[in-house]
Length: 126
Image (cartoon, one colour):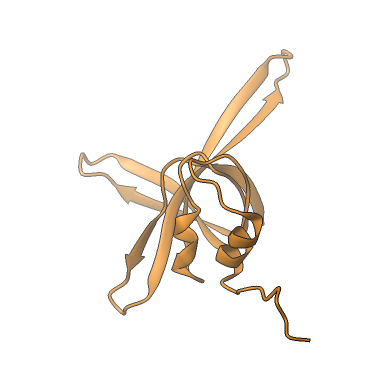
């Protein structure tokens, strides 16, 4: 599944109890449609996202960045400290494609390197 949205906050790297690193961030996805009365209705869905492949992407994932994400969705439910039932959407991200915006700019090559975790060799000896 693909979603496109803007980061609502800077990404953070967390380390699990077994030593694995995960990048956590949140994305807002906007949608609009016309209802039966012909009025435009705007809706925003918020996804809590996790990315396990490489923590290096945290450098480019800044608030406001427009991204296209590939992954899978899951739901979660919990009870808040106030006793209110809550629900949320999680997006388990397998690929991140930066599109536009954000506070810091990266070169396309640096973005590709951060995205895939691979480096590109332009100066091959042959």
